[in-house]
Length: 165
Image 1 (tube, rainbow, N blue to C red):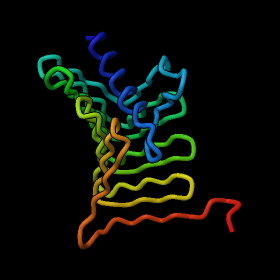
Image 2: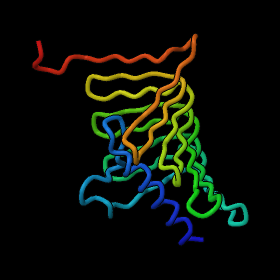
Image 3: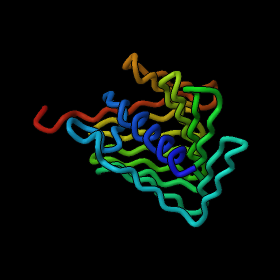
């Protein structure tokens, strides 16, 4: 079970470390940092090997290098081979350096190499703020999709770089 948990934590760090797009987060996984440990703290942890599920609940903090993810709950679901899903839910906040993101749910899909932020996600980074209903980041393709609807349209705010007139 400990080995299985370690594999899941490595998956978390890989998925988040691989998303080094201009809007992404690297969970401290920059060049030469792949060996950094991932720390998860919570009020409670429950592992169910039969269901292939590990749950962390209550003030969950996930750290690696300079990346910090706070959430109410973190679940690691081992579906079929290579198809693990990691779901952070409840007041999800991700911070790394000058980048920050907030959402109600962050889903990390291993096989598809994608991250989905749901529940009024907001991303802020050096002069950019993006808001929408749902944001999807395709890690291997270095692209993203932000969805809105008629009532809650996608909003992007761009600030001029310092030094520009």
